[in-house]
Length: 502
Image (cartoon, rainbow, N blue to C red; front, side):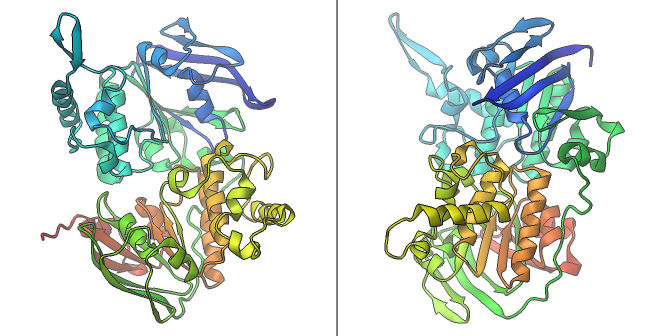
């Protein structure tokens, strides 16, 4: 690392008169991995959006290689050598992978002196070479819609690297990918560092931060809270800087003795993604589901919930056989599903916090079909207090909330429906350590009340810390089951790597 490549000085930003960043500075050296950490709402995303020209700063200065710059949009930032991988993906779903990678800079072939057309064959060829160099096994001719969330994230990584940037900003790049893809990403980060490219790495995952970072900067409430060389810090010190308090136990496991069986699934199938899945769930139990990308975890819980119409299978709820052909059927049977993609599937982003909280339980709250605002406001206040949802008011647009608080709104929405079985699909993806702990404590409270939880997660430590049992999936099937005394990362990965034919 031979000098400062990027510097942000005295950055200030307010929205609607509310300060979001106050006199924040950031210094990135050439060829380093610099972690930018803090709770949701600390100002990390706003800071990098100012860098990328998405938001103008109210005050402050940005220098690249010692020269002042003021990017007015992401295109100017990319031309200035700054690329970014966003946490919230925004692919063009009906275009090919190659078309997404080259979006806005399409390769063209000249047909006549006065006409050129997009050269899709060449774009596919160059995209294939790029993906091969990153060991990403994705077809460049596939449409983005056909990819999983994890595969879309890998395409975004390839797209950013294709610009040959001086600095790559990675905002929660591993939030939707499994350990196998994480290793691919970390290998690419090492290659970037070796070429003198700097990486600004935003993450809530402590193990990742300490594994790959050279230096760390911590934000709290829009201001600098500390930082330094990664090797001089530890997890406890970093958490204290981030949240302003000590968190003694990351995975608080509530000791609950599981009761009677509340759910039984046999032979559940959906195409080739879910193949004869069977399991049971008991009252007061947290059942974890592990597996690599493409294992069929999300498809399984979506088939169970009626989002996907199962082609076969028997489901018993509370000891009685039930046909679940739609989410409405599942809700009527006391089942809730908190989906993996909260923005696409879990929230009405144009609605307020109170409107989102009451959404699922409107029929229960207002049986005559007339929405009473006083009741809706009271319910929203109760759940905002109970789940510690941070928002300016219940009337705030849910789109304005941090990721952790958005996830709490999704949880509040489903808890208001009073389900007995709660399915959580990647519930802590992209949220900070403080919000994660709030959700873990809520899960403990729910099982203590006798609720049953199915937890789908790509974070093995999370599964092992919270679950009573773990099912492991591969190729659409359950390949292993582990009781809590048997938990180990090695056993889970061994089951997750099994491949079945047929």
